[in-house]
Length: 549
Image 1 (cartoon, rainbow, N blue to C red):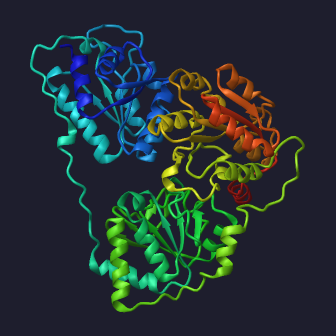
Image 2: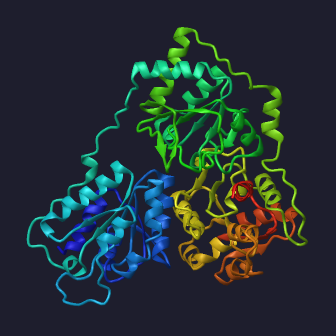
Image 3: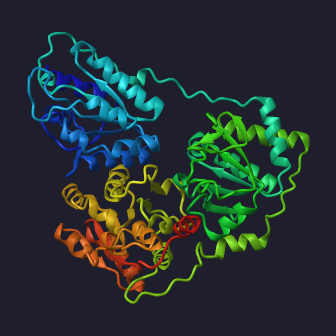
């Protein structure tokens, strides 16, 4: 047996069944052995996209995402995807190979560890065949337990060596311990209960920790018991999709009614949320509120600003349920006074942004596009949102469950939308999947449309096309600078997509969206809609940022 075959056995023992790949000298023998063992491979056209697809696949499935690239330049191409996975806390294993250890010179030679660690990921190096099985196990164990990306480097000449000793597979799954829920301190529970009971205008923000711990029902219960309004962080948008007092997303992407309510809040209860800068709109969202953070690892300082004034440490579900029991036991009744029918109607009916912009002939207002898409695309479609200016608009497609929404924006990198939607499509082959992306982001990795065709992936990709880089044009114009470098003019995106063999059309009339949707369901391939939008419409978060500047 060669080492690359033994390594493949270790990966299969970790229950790896899907790999996103671009082959080269550093990984092709291992990849061939994996394929021979029945692993499904999605072969991409760019290394960055292989990692980005595995990120989306991991987030949707809840499993460790697996990707592979060659050593040297193959790895350097992933230097944007890796920090994005670190920031988003996505468990990944990237098999990257290494330059040959027995050569005095190799043209793709590179010291890989410093680059990987500079991105915040862990690097696991195999330079002894006798330790190979244990290192693979340690890499997977770290990815799973820390929810972080890891990179595995194995010199390509070592991979081709025949093993002169027994190789025993040692999967990390045998070492994983059952999740132990941390119960909160009773004294801290009493203090939190007193704080909540005294609030007149409290809002609860649930994050990924609330969802993963199963605290959704407990959050609803305490909100209904005490008259609390509900909201979520962006990654779990839709967690309270059907609640009449849900303000949708908290942070820079909040709606008008959400901004008004947060401005009046005297207490924010953050459950399983990191209280990142985006969630608080850089500290501007709830300026009058005390902040109670309920989390396994609460922080009073987050991203350079004071995030919480009070903390309750513990598993999100256990902690919220404990607070509710404490309130019930002592007969506490809330002083909250703002759950009214009028507010419920305002939440349900007011547009998320009512600012008036001048019309631009031949181009749609992106807010009207989102409203029209929300009526046409069924609520059970998995919606994928990319980064970029258009993301603020796409956030407000309502009535959709959290499990049918995917966004990964923590690193602020555009150009990932196509990769994310293809990774999500591989993860959910029996569900319709749709992407909303901007034209600048979409065109960055347009080569992956060929990947979609080759592998028979059939998502809908919706491009909100302002013929520019949306964030940059608004910033440049505000600063009185030429926007020439950020404006590109018509790009014929539908024609580009058709050139790759996809179904594609330009949407000049929003009335045509229903027939376009029906055509997509019938066409049998991936579909691209090119929707021209006005470059005059700035998102609310952009306007607030520029006003503050």
